[in-house]
Amino acid sequence: MTPESGALAFAVLGRPLVARRVPARLAAWLRESWDYSGHAAARSGYAIELNVTAAAPSGAPHAWPELDVAVPGRTLRFRSEGSVWETGEEASGLRLELGGSGARIALWGWEAEGDGAARYHALYVAMSEALRASGLVPLHAAVAARGDDAVAWLGASGVGKSTTLLHAAAAGWRPVAEDLCWLEPAALAAYGWDRGVRCWPETLRRFFPDLAGARSAPDGKLLIGYERLGGAPSRDATLARLALLERVAGSPTHWEAVAPRDLVKALWEATGVPLSRHARDTTAAAVERLSRLPAARLVLGDTPPRLAGALAGEFAQVRGG
Amino acid sequence: MTSITDAARFRAKPGVVATDLETEVVLLDPETREMFSLNATGRVVWRALPGRVADLAAEVTRIFDVDGGRALEDVRGILGDLLAAGLVVPEDRDA
Image (cartoon, rainbow over all chains, first blue to last red; front, side, top):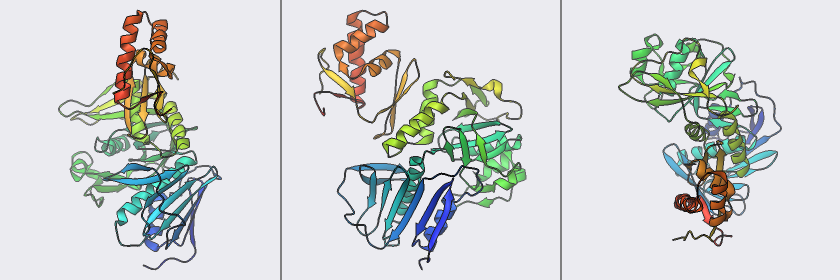
């Protein structure tokens, strides 16, 4: 693979990213994963710098205290001291340095033999930590908006977030995110962070036959581009309500009240736990803020959820506002 | 095994994130990613840390209508659960 000359530069939700000496495949991954130019996020002075080198930086890898970071399908081992994290070995690895005004990511031996997927996972963690350090919080949720009302549907992988989003879109809601959005906690502004809705073929045949012909995703699901779901192209929204999804087969779909502790736990599962103490405090404040929104539990049974009417009556403030 | 005597002192494990729900509290250990919820009595104990077992029990009797013996029993049970979950540490260790 031939390294690109020059630097790759774009803004990630208003945070300038400059990546130097980036191989073409890595550049494509950065664009696909982090370049969502359609969002109306305010400009930020927090800069992210990414440098690719052949050799490890001086002193790396360090014998620092280790910590494991779970990512989908695997666990990555990081070492940390202060506001610096490393992963990998002398031949290939990553270092993340978080500062008050920016983050620096060093990659070395990026194209060496070995577990390439682990390197991309590690870089995803590093980029996420950089955004967290800049004040943003990730929220694993499906999000849909109607007028000024936006609902985040929280739940574990496979519980039915995508299908609920498709039902919401069919009922006139504007899809914002299928599985992930980045949140500006102060304003509760959510920015959709995916390229389409992934759905099992059987679900599409059963509930959404009009959407047949969607592209296949690598995991066997079908990918439906947001442009096929109608509505405005904007995928920004201000969160107003939270719905916890739970699947119970053999019962009709219905709404229930949600206990505050269940709401808080679901929010921590949706935001994840950051590496840095500063970002942890930011996330804790975001969880606190979000947990004061009106919330409800949507128990998904054997019937489609009714999302066409006003949903205000289904939600209740489970904590003081 | 840590002994939970009246004179023993405990404190929250550093880094544990607490979300106070006014009548209960949800604790998150960032190292293990595990969450733990405490009821109203547990919340009073958590908020009173660091402290001696006897002082924590006194705080429970101040807030709730329970006698000292019952409060001590509750505090020992709560601290035992928190110790098992790794969410509190004795103050004489790792101080």
